[in-house]
Amino acid sequence: MNTLQIIYPNDMLTPSLADETFSAEYTQACQHNIHCVLLSSEAAALGEYRFSSPLLENVSVIWRGWMLRQDEYENLSRAVIKKGAQMLTSTETYLSCHHLPGWYEQCRDLTPETIITHPDADFDLLTLASQWSAWFVKDYVKSLTTSRGSIAHSAQEIREIISLLKQYRGEIEGGVCLRRVEAFDSTSEQRFFVMDGHVYGPRDEIPDKVIDIAKRMRSPFFSIDVINNDKGELRLVEIGDGQVSDTKEWSVERFVRMLSGFKRN
Image (cartoon, rainbow, N blue to C red; front, side, top):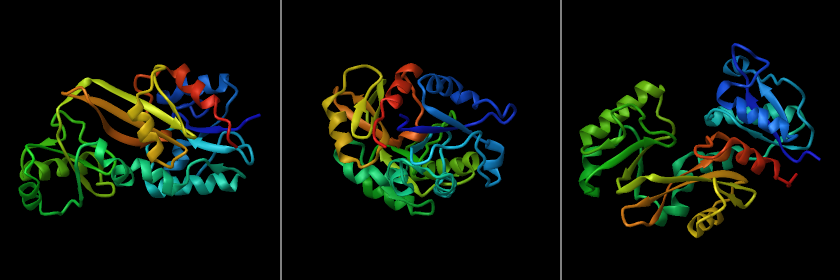
């Protein structure tokens, strides 16, 4: 019996196919007998929600696609309800993982210290008060991924990064987060997924600290990114909603096997 169904974005040039980014996952999910439907990316961009085939009534739905703003996720949820189904993750719960302030307080002892503010804040005052050597600058969701990077060493550099975020993303989503820069081993970063309370990893070993983090959150499907610092301690990089988190170092087959094991209806 189907206990989960998945919506994927279609390819705008070939609407009968999944978007190239999600094509391999979509194919694997279908092969694992998960009910999958395609959402018209072109129609969704205009605020319309057209699916390639009917959704199964009373079967939980997840979205596996691009990051969605709050209004976009709400619109998708309403479209799913009209088809007789319901998203596994509510909008409120989606934002609790997708936006940094939604999970920071629950995990602040395990992750870099963070100042949550707004784009027009007095950054001269904030940097003077925090006295950190460097600040990692992002909005509630994303950091700057250009060659400039998101690390600032002064208030002026913070303002520069915020300006570039607006330029490249078109907006600042939610607000601004200034994160204290810690010394990390970039080669040690790992992504774990939590589905209905069960923690899954790219390999069989699950660190105790990841299990601890998973217990602090109340979402049915989310990701946990961890990394080692220069002392070998495991630190939380971020939590994300599982629907819009890429699989990183996971094999597609392993990831889909996790999805196919979902039993709650």
